[in-house]
Length: 441
Image 1: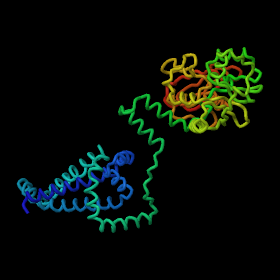
Image 2 (image 1 turned 90 degrees about the vertical axis):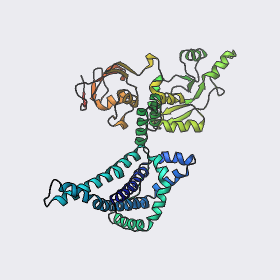
Image 3 (image 1 turned 135 degrees about the vertical axis):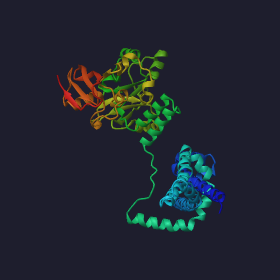
């Protein structure tokens, strides 16, 4: 054959190898989530790609048969086509015994470079740009190619499967999507500008509902405002005016003897109608949802949905009331920093870039968010910053007691009747990683 005919055949072989390389990477890299969206929108080719991914052994066997056959054939043709010309070129400058070897090396290098560039590197890089789009485009012709290679592919797969079983290699592909996978996708979307900052923030907080327990978002026991059965009308009116709550617990004598709750709206209606309250009774008291403090916020949302309630009292294992929680509390947890609190009610106040004043009752999850801490030690043993301090110090903290962890110094500023009211948290600038240590002054 002439040089021109050889070049045409080599170009065809390179194009065929390039198509197989493009298809191989596109089908392997196509994401199932995007393919399912395309399939649900009516694209039958996307469903074919999904089916091929589920049973990919035939395709990869056929692909390797094609790639290797083309590469070997291309090498044979290329060496025979170009070696005489390179030998003639080398002979002009060198007539020694190595001339033929040099000509062979140059022809081999040229053909190999052409295959690497146009049949391997460039197609694979193109396939990585839009794997789903390319996979859908090539699925029909590649299925014809798979059928053509079926007999030989079956034989090769049989040998491969035998070897896998011999060496106990599990070839089942796991497609489980974890929270880390979703988080990585969200981070990528935020960096690309697909997700706005607040959207990214909300989605992260929604996923955290599965990890956060009810006590991290509830109103704690000491801050619960409640009525007793013998509460005077004047006292009820005063509490309604003083506290902007929509629901109040009703207890027998103390907070641990919960009877139910009253809706402030019901009481206000009676006041507006000039009806005397006298004392609370079954007409105004409603049954209250009681939940254990071990529930996650996600589980509580399910309880609210199933019971049609929006208010619950939280008890511990000793049947003591530890707080109350509403649907609004959960929503505030989801909204996070985007809910603008009254300055006096802020649990975390940033003094400057390297120091914060933080209430001891601050949930540990909120602390980690504010300080960008990825992990706290032994979080099963506490739920708040005050609990963290007590766990690390192994005692009831006093003012000036401090704990150093993760590049931050946590120092107790104010203690009221054994309750840690406020801490000063300072970033240590000398070292990014400071070993844990505690001190008491």
